[in-house]
Amino acid sequence: MYYQCIGKRICCDGIGKTFEISSRQVRFTTPHVFKPRQKIRLTVKWPVLLYDTCLLKLEVLGWIQESGPGAAAVKIERYEFRVGAFPVPARPLAEASASDLPEADILVPGLRL
Image (tube, rainbow, N blue to C red; front, side, top):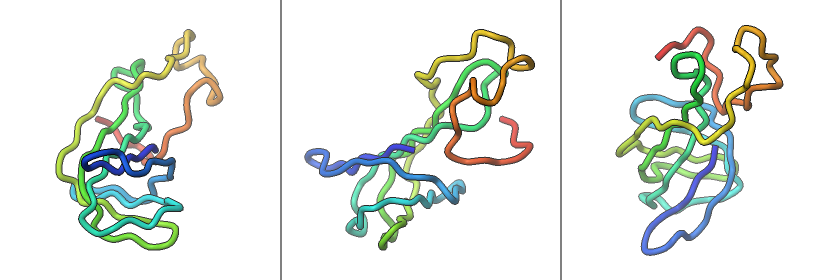
């Protein structure tokens, strides 16, 4: 996942790993320590394909609820699923190998949209 702290300007950005997600909050790993209530934008590669062919990403706008060394929690203010700008394998998914697909940030067995 990718994150950007926003305000009057982008103050920092980086890459982390999502380790918990719910309808209200996202927790992720980060080397940064953020100020409480700081605005942030997250982009997460979604692990499920739309119609088994189209890659998705989850874009979240929120604010830092808590932050410490190595991890942060974001209160979700608004979210949106968008079509990912990632290449889709040319072969049907039944024939595609795991290396043909991009690695997802979160793994949820059996999750369907």
